[in-house]
Length: 396
Image 1: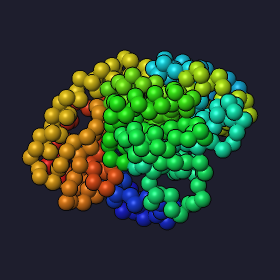
Image 2: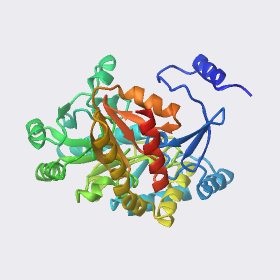
Image 3: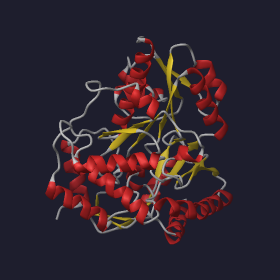
Image 4: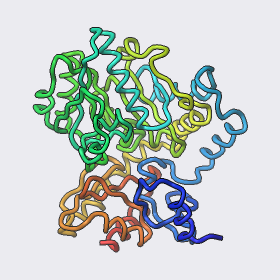
């Protein structure tokens, strides 16, 4: 059998080098553990970047996908299919919104949300000079539209000119948002909890203030729940804890728990006055296999009480992380909600800690330039949290 080194060399020969991958080849997973090609086990507190919420090897999930493969994988959106109806019903029930459009990724969900917002504004006044306000230090994806509303110039520099009509405000600074609003503003987009930017939850007063601004001027509020949604913060969607419903929501990652799928979801007002046949489409989005995954994920969340589990175990996770902050001077604070937590590092390179953790059999991620990001499967136990803290200390 080839070694990990050989697999890495083979990959580099044929796959475009757009990722500086860690030198590990994962072969399989079980529960909250991954195993590499040499048989070494790793406790996973990264979950494929907040994707694998149910852990690895969930038999009911696997069986649902295998069963759908034997029935039907793809037909296109020229026709109806059964899993599409089931997945749509469950997503609408969980969100309390009106209509969903299934995509293949989070980035595509953002693209659809932006188009829906602009079409809504066009239907309202017939103009095409509308503007969108996004947040500094945000991350919404890598396609041109999603990149245009991503508040990180480093990601944008080589790809200009980007989509026009985008302004940036400061996250959790309502006055900054107010200063960017004009008669041309059609939407404000932000992450309910900023992920790549450093694990920053929205301040309640800020999010409510943005919503009030939107309602007063018929501006659409787009909340990006791609990373923080699907139970990760202790509710199906983080905005539900704020009592602030968006006009458009995007989700992906744990929506399919490993199968590539995303969605943008609209409230009734927006759904009735935006996209119509011919405005937007996708060949693969909403196909039977992806929607069978989404449908089963919602079933398992209910059966295994995943959201309740996150809520009940969050205090213990926060307690263990706060103890690390208290113990180590280079850890300056903890930020986050639920199972989306960050440890802020000062004076030491985060990348080095992440690499040492991997050497010690622990998968964690970075966020921004100074944050250790922990986004584990939502099925972790107290014992897993204890093991994480021990391995993280060994890495320090």
